[in-house]
Image 1 (cartoon, rainbow, N blue to C red):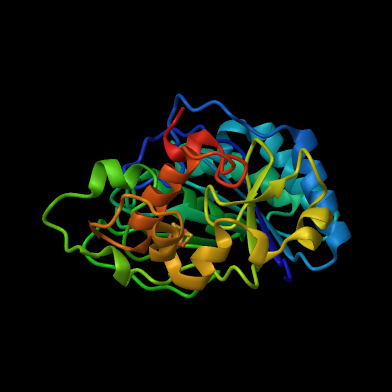
Image 2: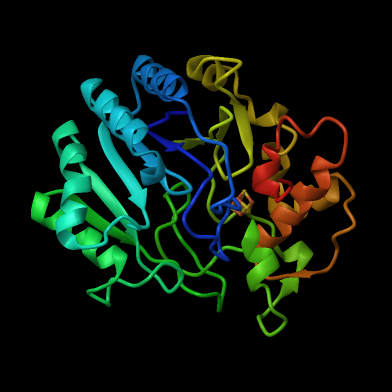
Length: 301
Ligand code: SF4
């Protein structure tokens, strides 16, 4: 496994409570990363020697601005490419957004990804928060891109291992409760024999949450940085020994249902829909809570 990217989920708190959010973020979500954990993660990524970029995301990372700024500065000092994902809520005007972004630019921020969709306010509207944020970033010479999630209509395809920055909603997290209406097409459980996004044999990027959990897909745990170092977690990773990655890699979400005899032999919207419900069921069984965590991502907080 050659890790090249580390995405830090600075906080679960967000200004929005989007229907498609994978991690149940909302204004009431509390867990937030300490600077101590951020620095440990960045230092250990440096020691690993293969990581090239550090991303800050959430929730909404600008809600903890001084910590975000210190994190970007530290990552840059250690030689990483840096990026932030934001909904741009702070951009009350372009001039104001420049004030927010200028210190980050001076700290060495390389790129900004702004949420641009019906859930957050579109870049097509020049007076939206995302559009003002984008205009400010362009003024400052920060690379800026968009993350555009479309309302659900059909199963989407993307390259395994790449971050999700476009296409239709994936049915996991809050999307299952809020967006899985009966008019959408469904398929039989045993047709979902592959994970569409993750390559569990060769993981290129990992997410770190405020509790120290290291994931590939949100809520699928490699290890916890509060208990072990990044190097130890990566060196000790064994696909064949992992009770969730192994069946998922071998036969997709359908194999999770088969292997653990879950009562989920129905019809589902996509592979993630079945996978997420299977994982929620597994969390109720003994021995799975350390591999499927935290409760926040499973709607338990
Ligand atoms: S929810 Fe399951 S099937 Fe979907 S990307 Fe994550 S691991 Fe793969």
